[in-house]
Amino acid sequence: MFDDSDSEIGAALATSTYQVPDVLLEIAAHPPKAGFIDRSRVSITFAEAHRYGLWFSQQSDEIDSYREGYAPKLDRHAAFLGEMYRDIERTHTRDDTVAYTAHDDSVVFWWSASGFLNKQVVTGTLERVDKFGLHDCEVFKKLATLVGTTLPKVKGAGLLGVLGGIVGGFYRAVAGAVLGAVLDISDAEDIADDLSIFVEGSTRTRANILTYRNPDIMLASIQNFRVGQMNIQSNVNQATVNGALNVFTTAGLVNLDVSPVLAGLTGAFLGNALAGPPAR
Image 1 (cartoon, rainbow, N blue to C red):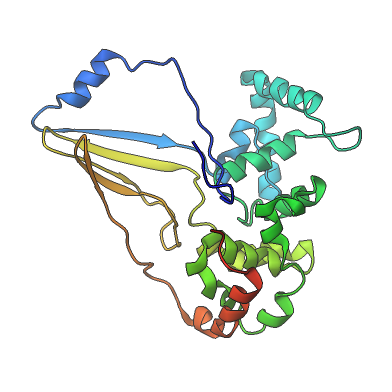
Image 2 (cartoon, rainbow, N blue to C red):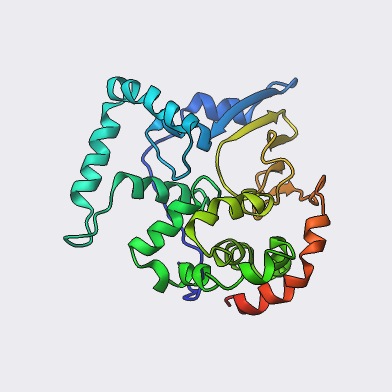
């Protein structure tokens, strides 16, 4: 099924015995002439993490307050979450000294939503790369190759300079820029925040989906999703003409102040050269 041994993309396939009820299929296949509208949501935001017992590394009094406030509610109404995390910690251990904890699992959850470098989780990412020796993993190895080298060269001229290589691969350039610019782990959140336009746009957190369907066509879009940020490989609006034809569009990045980008263009070639050629 996967024939590209050099691919940096991981995919998970899931199957289920669930069958869509016939009544829902009928509604979808034979909508009223006036059409109908469906509203749905997928995933969660970082701001909702405390409601589901999920952790991220960014710290503040507000975040701590939410976590403390929801802890009794989780214990009372979602005790299974605590049991699940205790089972994870009990059964997932690499050796006698490195355990896979609930916090580790939360970081991996955000990774699964393409949240590697967001300011909320970037410190947790760096710590897990170190904890589990992921420097030798091909993907994380490329993320870490610029550690301690880019900041003194680029920060003064504008951190965004290394993003000039973005056409050669999103994560190669952006992740290399963020992680490579980190001289000290304490800088990570500030740098990720500086580059938020680029590193947060493709994070698959909460999406509010609005779908309109009539006998002729179905239109669907994600409402107000990461406005003003660069999003890579996300289909945020689509027209379904029939079972064989879908039409979707892309758009340029609007309302972006390009002055910091221009200020950092001197680092563009440096970002490309240090990141290396894109994987084939």
